Image 1 (cartoon, rainbow, N blue to C red):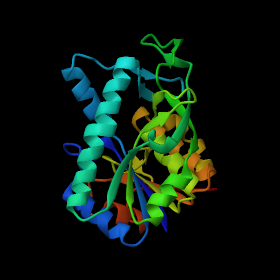
Image 2: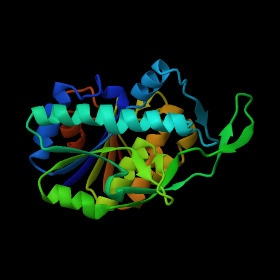
Image 3: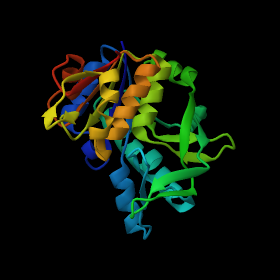
Image 4: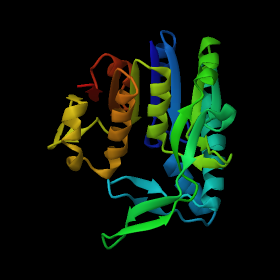
Length: 270
């Protein structure tokens, strides 16, 4: 089985997964080819603030909330994501006997992206505005050969959500979308998006299972904290991933429970 797991920044403690999650990763890794993609936006925001660079967040007409990445913010983002967080996760996994290798989407041209020239946002008065795109990108290609080389050599890749543009500029990309493109390129059997909530909540209740067609009808009911994961899930299905699970990474054996259908929300083609 090929499996891609996104570790949300909200469940990272001091940049590293907790022991419960690491034990589950170790058990799952022994039975399948596993790729981890990590987040860590809160840590970026915290460090940027301490450096005197307050972060700006914008919201798209579709409800996506994202970090506005100017040049200075990009420098901090690269430093924290591909440096501090990546190495803390990798060193912790190595301590527990896992052959982790930390790479960013820049390394080996792992994630190629088209730089966004402009962004359409909703301002504080609810009006649409067009602003420069900054250093953000939309993923267009995954260097699958690099990942397969690592996986076939027995390594556990840990990917930081950065990408390389077509003018060889470094770009910020969303972690959930990065995970979906990696899963799609690998033709993974499962994509698991771990976060700090139980799963997708619809009409006040946890949705245990839903098809992509049913999900499209519910998009207006989904809040900004979950909408990116939902779109990432639908993209992964379109790219050939069998099933996507959105679930809490704070529960015992979160990955195993997701694989067994005992936790979170399973999204399937249909």
